[in-house]
Length: 442
Image (cartoon, rainbow, N blue to C red; front, side, top):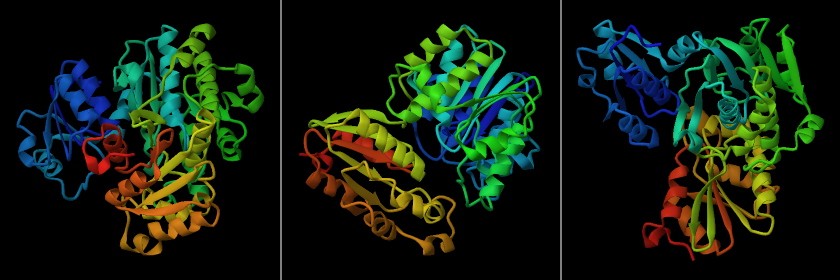
């Protein structure tokens, strides 16, 4: 992929996707430098692999011998000094998704798309193909223990398995041979005009499949069936009877993970993998970072962290945890992600927390929100809405107040799950590490 370049600089190198490309460049023997706003597991992993990672964004981070710059679309393209100096020097620049698209064009790519479950299913499918001896390259939006804690596995086979992000139609940069569509429920309505616009993006993706390729879709999802109409090749719909017949013995809980596993298994078979080895790979799967991740125990309390930020994800995750811990109280600390999303999906959030014993709602994590968005809703309004259907929901305000509420409420035997796509994961880490008396629980 990078054979014509010698020194590649990554702006936002700590991102879950772009850091995977940094690892690919390092594997090809290229010099890799990059910058980010803060340290993370991904920046540490790139350093350990031989990359040079700098904190902050400064023009002098782009040295004179850089011949390619790849940047995350999360940066402000109008005010980033590294991107500005790159453009001034006429260095070739690409977004992460453009670069990923170029790489996918060199492989037989299976894209894993959907509103929910992409990360887990991508990792499951990748491990299934690895176990089947097909040696794929796998790029996931989260750290995977089976990949040595990295977000990718680099193989030399023909196949690429990649998580397909629908935000801003980013997945249209990819060149798929096969596709999984797990579900298609409206999200990212700060970008998409409405449900029809959202579904149309998936239709565009599926129209890119070659006729000799394949599609695996959720047969119970009306939007997925509509999307599948855009494809003339081999299509398999996953249904409940099929999920039950598979009878997987998974190491990750929840009915939705049995559906994820069935989608992954079906795609792996269509790619030519051996059925027994595929099953073994899926049943060996132990999860990924921030997907019902057990962070540890503190004073008899189990601390779990999860990325769920859509009502459907919240409800499914809490249901899975209640199934897995049937006789324990479940305290959910849910940090809403985006004012716009919270407002648009408020009706769904109202009834999403039924399986939690207690719900604590810290302040909304702002991301790409306008002042108009912020004027429409706040955490107190969300608490009131959830309270119409749940007997024990409180406003957590900031993390300090949230911890104080946990100190008062949590007791040995409880399960605490922190949920959200913002910085709520920091709270789970602090609770688990129990660094000082301020976060110590009973």
